Amino acid sequence: MANPSDKDLAHLDNISCNTEVNLQVLTPTQAIRLKTRLIGVDSGKAVILALGKDRQWQLASEFVTHGQGVVVRIINAEDPEANIVAFRSKILKLLNAAGQWLIIEYPKQLQSVALRQHSRIPIHVEAAIYSINSNLDVTGDNISVKPISRGHLDDISIKGGAYLGETIAEASADDEFQLQVNIEHSMETLYIPIQIKNIQPIEQAGLCQYGFCMSESGEDIEQFVQKVILSHLMQ
Image 1: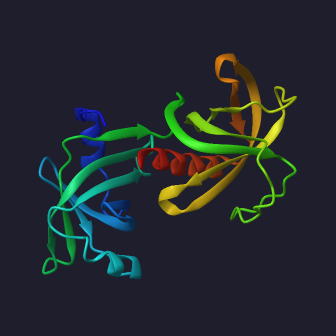
Image 2 (image 1 turned 90 degrees about the vertical axis):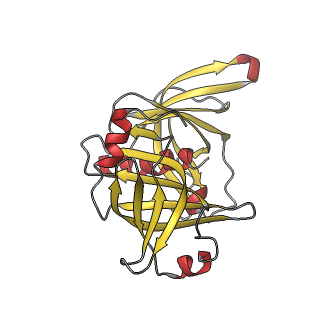
């Protein structure tokens, strides 16, 4: 992640209390992913999170300790650009007497992405394309259906994106397909209808880049893009 700019840090410092936080505990043997909420930010010193009480937090309790490395990801939905903020840090302390708080070291490195900006955001997230008639369910349980192309998302925005992958036979501009993305950190499979807008063969690799727009409502697209960007930042 790049060194944080004053603007990036301002996004972090001004995120509202009670905003949902995605927390990943970095262990050598397993991926521990927890959800919590922001208590507050002491600029330049610490980020304060709520200690969770659900079963996932109970199972992770032995790893939630002083010095443990973590990755923090926050979507600042109240910001006009819906900035997604992500950083690596470590746990400084747990404060039970103050109301069960988890104190995280203020980041030295930080990444901030404006979700609602119109420019494309470079990413690399594994994806696949299916026929629009595949009748895939939203849980992705229909394993008998095979994708017509495997590849990855190369960039994304709420206006559309670029998919780089295996060539789709006889595909042309305005054709419609279903795009699949597996979100590893939440173990979720997403599907969204897309329409191809342009095709650029990558001859030396035997692949094609497909520019596309998404055929859903604005809210559904925004939720899809949020999850895809968070998946990218989890890597």
